Image (cartoon, rainbow, N blue to C red; front, side):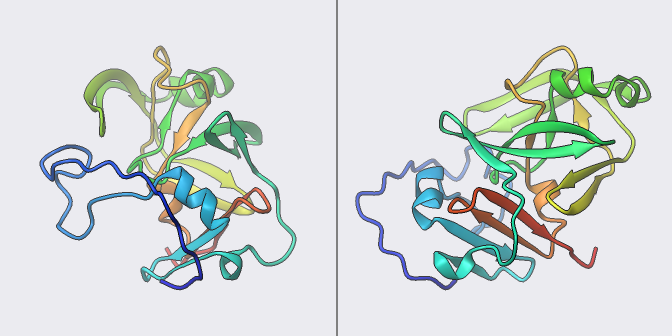
Length: 194
């Protein structure tokens, strides 16, 4: 980890190791950095090797797409599927990308081709099961990179948020590196080897 940053008066929530969503993760991989810390860093970049940078050295190089914005305190990223522009809450702590009613309304043919099933959503608040549709491969364009989810779930009759979905690590982890730059309001994914 590199960077020059000193934070004071940072609040922490400490949860037991037995509590979701970390209960099944190995020791040393449990925990998350909250949004106030990420904003204070201004920019952060991490890659597949585990290297993490923050501050001015982590800023995106070259012209940006400004695909990031805030709705209140929620970071929102603009992405597209089949040429349709969609908005996703950005959740770097979510294992999976979940798609909401707005996605189902924007791309009904993709949803119709899927199979109905129940899906558990687990977070630090607990776990709930919802009716969903699991789809075949879906290509998401995030910034200038195409990312494929092999079997994403959409919740067509129950929105888990007001946006078209919640973008999680299954998309972010496909990039060679991820830059989250609040100074330029950009989420940049750089092409990986996968």
